Image (tube, rainbow, N blue to C red; front, side, top):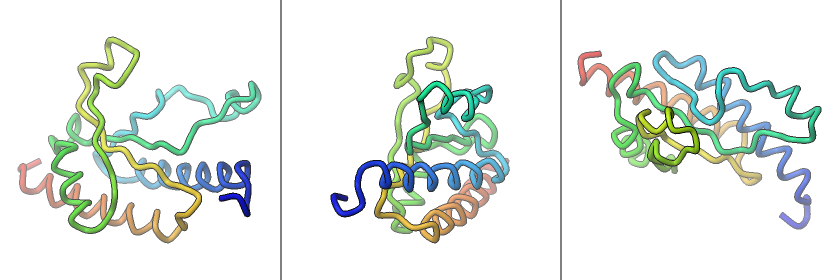
Length: 134
């Protein structure tokens, strides 16, 4: 971390998070929840703000797949994620949403690890949805 510096580490982690969000958006039934759909990256940057590398998503509202079940499936495959409750939100209307899976890419991760995680998420969501009959 010291050798590369905080700015470079942040840039790498946020690039990985952007790759992850892009991949998640392409997975049927996956709903990204870490920012509203209206969030504009360019406007945020112009104001000196940036999206962090914390990525949250769920598939319960679309496929009926609980975040806890996806968490267990991914952990079994060696992919570290966590689950955050919908109450972890400042917007009252959002508190009724399902819990989310949280993935936080870091400066130590590589693009290939993001791709591996995306493939596993797609496979496990499809499997869990089939088991639910969705």
